[in-house]
Length: 357
Image 1 (tube, one colour):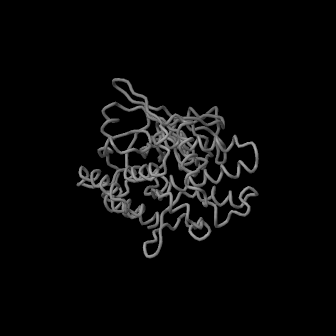
Image 2 (cartoon, helix red, strand yellow):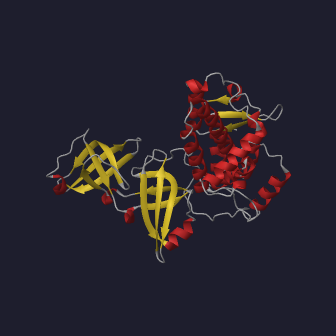
Image 3 (cartoon, rainbow, N blue to C red):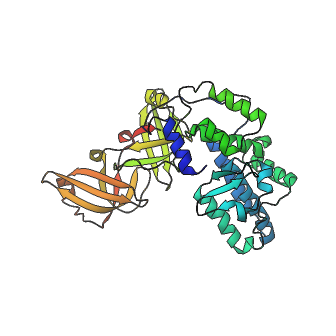
């Protein structure tokens, strides 16, 4: 199933793609998996390990293990499926998919394009010379030892570095991103009896629709609305009344919002959850400068319109996001702005409205 088909399936069960808060489904306590933050820690551990190789032969070996980790983490495949893979035949970097399984049960699984670029980039580099068709031909015992070591290195229990934990983690990630249960089972090539049982337990409380939140990297742009940022929650800070939420877009843009604790609970916000942040144009300030930051967006002015009292400043972010600020013309008197100028759009966290998908 392609990423477009997965997106269509999510929209079909999600009421046409309308933004709506929904409850967070819970994973049974006895199921071992890694959440988004733990997966990021584990990946960073693998990358540090590669960077510390010291010798080219050791770096080559470690990069192969990193490539294997990325494939397992993002495909949800079984270890045996990937170890026996000819990536030259199975991986289609143009379409960002990988073929898993054997005839007549071959399945097509979407991969992030960044992962495809990293895999093909390694194979095309001097360190990847001679590995085409056998990139993942590694000893399973060695693989497990390296995975356990990386888990311990980043402070996780060693057993949480096991390949089958990555498989379950991918299943949880897809369900929380809005992928229907049937699609998850198709992507994973579901055949494990114990994993089926876990899925069944997860789905009992989701009769009204297991679709949760659409994955940001696959979500289609359904609106031309300006000042809209799609991303994932990276951290949360709460007191007894308010909650501060930070999200990061696919382009690495940081946006922070402060909302009431009631809204936070209603929206089911947590680290790793996909959200959409919006800011109304009157709440956006225009500043001179080029240095961006959280809630400080470096933009290029695309148009300025005024009526003698107010000026509408349209701009485009580095990632192509359309932005708009509505300011008093008196504020621009000492700061003439024209199309092509580089400025900063800034806004307060209290002005940012969050939606879950």
